[in-house]
Image 1 (cartoon, rainbow, N blue to C red):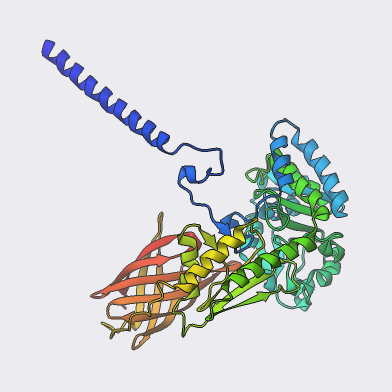
Image 2 (tube, rainbow, N blue to C red; image 1 turned 90 degrees about the vertical axis):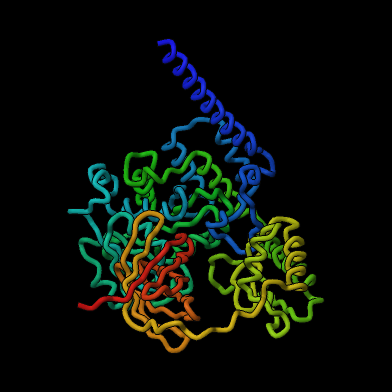
Length: 516
């Protein structure tokens, strides 16, 4: 018994030691990178910020909110308020500023589209609200002109609706029926065409079908151009050119529809509950709208051109490099000048993709726009004071002494002919899928078809010895999915990885199809 007690004491002591050691390790790890509420906030957790010379893209956190927005959000965080009362007050105030009938603030432009769709289906009816996205017995169709299909219309499709595409004006009215919930239009140059807002609005009004325009990245027009054309409502991103909070959007238009959209969103127990907008974002968005007519937009434009001019002047001594100031099209989205930086490939062996990667990978990190074989663009839209000097210095250094531009290795004879049908298994971080490749090979060149689970697209690529690389693009609802395969042939099996862009990476293995 005494022996057992000694063993138990030893085991307990060792267990406590391990536990203590583990806690100490956790504590040490935590202490190694404490959160710093300073300009080094991101670096303190191992995240490397970037300079945004690309534009208002959500993946690089859009825009920087105005100082007035930051102040409004901080002050709003210090008090409690009833959200229904807050939205009523904010809606009236934004409506006054924008000359719209009413307004609500949402959790981004996508949320505005979802809430509007829910309102078009369920209205103020709580029984219908609770059924969403079960659309049995409810309006379940949304009409979208084919040119307006895009990856963002997922915000509408998430309600479970069926999209009805129309390509000609003559198809519009016959497509409207008792199941039609709304019509959606993506703002842009084609909105002035035969299936634009002004053309569709009278037909929509005749059948009492609400019409919403997605103007996410547009400048805010007062009075609103889309409402003037007859739209029921127009949706904006709050965190792009308006420079409000990143997690905010704006919906302007018909008061009854927008109040129904608010009831279908958080904090109410409805479909939009998960798309919550807080008091800080609501007041920050109001501050951004308040500032819009007060901002000197001509002076901002002049400042953007001045910053691009500085970058161009710094690159002017590089004889192989030319710069061009490019002005935007009449489109209202992301209205900003840009500087195209182009070089002579016979003198500088450097691709735009390589330069863009070097600008991003090396400190200070800079994201540029539209890399091509021999050019990149600098967009000043969201540059902060002094960042043009940082960009100019880095660009000059990389273009004066280009690195990493070695010519691609010459192609070797293909180890085998890959022509035929291949069965492909894609293994994602979670889950897998079976795809099919139909390949045609001519020397080192690959052409063919990539069939996914639901659709198919063309592919192009190369074979060098045992190394196989090809790209494909498969259409999907409102968008396309790009695949970039890189693999090695081992006998009758092809294995490697697939770059899925914003969706990460998968591994794949392929074998020739065995015909029955």
